[in-house]
Image (cartoon, rainbow over all chains, first blue to last red):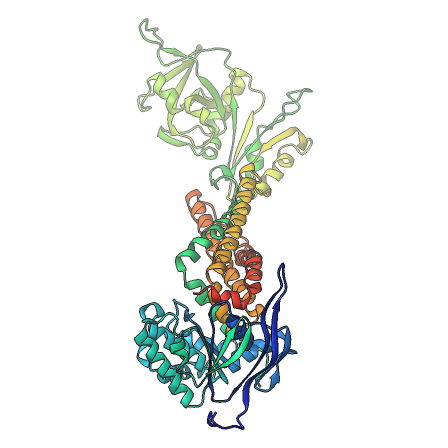
Length: 233
Length: 405
């Protein structure tokens, strides 16, 4: 992760070639058509688009939560189409850190316990979990809230906790879905600054947003309209 | 390796499930109540029927447990053949385990009245119909008679056919005799008797309380008493069954079957478990409660799955497979059922002990019953949780994540 974003020879963390997603049903819907996209290690890419444009579908495919119906998707050089469900789950757990619009913190568990949850499905030993969770919280500047319950935190603090959880496994990719959608403008600025800092430390970020102001902070923007992806500058 | 399948340690599975349960402790407690009631009803019903079936019939009564009464069997052939010998006390006194023995016979006085006064008082009743009994000297010990005053009949009185009498306390009261030092006399019909003693009470053969007791020899001579009617035996504790089996041969070696020997029943348990309709009703009640409890667990787990859709989505994003999600909800529902079983078994056992204490019974419970209850509860929870767990595992992570938290 030490390679810089400008390095032309950087390894592609994700690589989509002609990826399509078709929902069969009463009415067949082409949610994604011929998507080509590569995100190199250390890049910060924003996917912009209005609601219904297919950006959530794209996020789910990138995040290995859903499968594409045509084309080729490589995550960290591995073709994910022939992986078993269990392997995709393992890949989600180790390779991707998710950040959601509504934070998805468990209300009755402390911030530290929420962060430690990231380790549960890795069959990881429980011993060093707490120190690593505390380190992740330190990284997002939330060490002083470690033993709080999420309902007692502000929106910005909750999103920091969620980011700490995503960082816990040292993922290859931080995948964010409208990460500032529930935050006010000041908090949004702070969270974006955190993303910027993490990106500078070498973390690859893919972020979905409908807000052009938020997208502007990313290193690169792509626009999705009616399931078709285009570069945006 | 990035493609290594995700996994979960047993410890993490239990941690996550327990944390899930305790997120809403109040709801968990209410959910468990149905199972608790069901299993408590089952455990207490099984325990109580076992306890009731095992109790000792009646109370152990030392007085009743040492008494044997022998009498001739009522026989159609001849009363003289099937009769007790006069020397019965001597014969039985030789047996080991016999503490005291005496003959007792009602005397037929042919309607003669008993009086203590030769003068007829026109205002007060002075002549009474009283039971007249003939007793051998040993009888007073055999019936545990207490003497208030005077002395009891002895062997010489019988041999010489003395006209003496001992009064039961009730008889003495009616005849107006309270002391014997001034040699009071009573008459049975025209025959005069000297009252030599007054009893205070008897522990056995309560008829003696109101009787005039005369020597056997006197009864033989005056009232043609042919044979003793009863032999009353007091045995040592624990000797009744042995002595009772020896009595017929000792008294009538020629015809042991002609005697009727009444001895106390050996302490025994009610072998047959109490299988009353009430018992069956309680078992059905327990089963129904268990069913209601199971439905409760299923219902609450299902509601919990709906509420925790966002959490399920998050867990899928963090690497959980369908199997991991199903496992967690199954462990949650099984834990609830198991906890219900533990509480139910404890409650049921307490009910058995409480009822037993109230009834002075010895609580008896099959150790398997309270041990099996948590297993039955756990199985109930497992079965109840199956459908909700499958529902949870089938949620698409994408949709689950959109549900928020």
